[in-house]
Length: 249
Image (cartoon, rainbow, N blue to C red; front, side, top):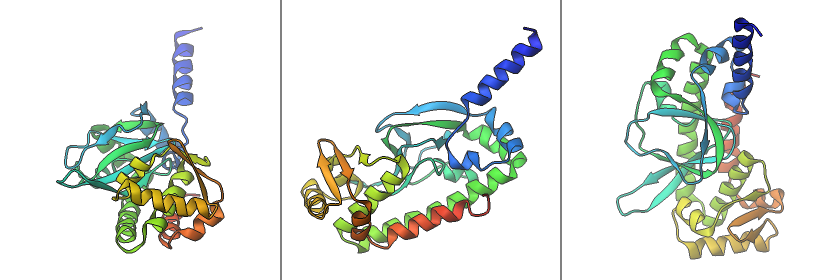
């Protein structure tokens, strides 16, 4: 094989290796994806790893290819609560799209997955030449803000059974599985409550036939019944996600 052929082969292998299920990257025009692709690096997001700490500089942005990454608000007494989540529909590091380099949230991986990451420096460099990416990331940042506000309202106004049902549905949507790998301890942390309260709420959902509690996991046995137990916030948040890609289909 000639030198040119080897270079072409390596380029094809790289393009193939960076094919992705992330919906933002898949929505890009081919010419823009080619510009972004040279700066992307595939990485594994391991369970409970922290991608960004609150109020610290964001060094990388991540395009998850599945899994669940949670936005968590930590408080001074050591407690925390989840206010949003990202899967393959989104981007971790949305403040970078607006020229910011910090966030008040921690981002924790709750379900392991792979992702394509880009350094903050390279993202700033490529955005002026990739207008559709800029539009999508800006739109995503705005919609994500609305999601965070909706979740905060939900955490304040709706009961734990409704909030747990919403959280399980949102998680299942992102991992496309009937089984979500969550312990009651993790659910208590994410929902800003205690384990006994989660146990009671999960028991109610199980009695309704919506879920089945397994060791370290929860199986969604009937989505329609689980939807009936949640509040309107789940549907509102789903509609936000649909709006993100409405002009790019």
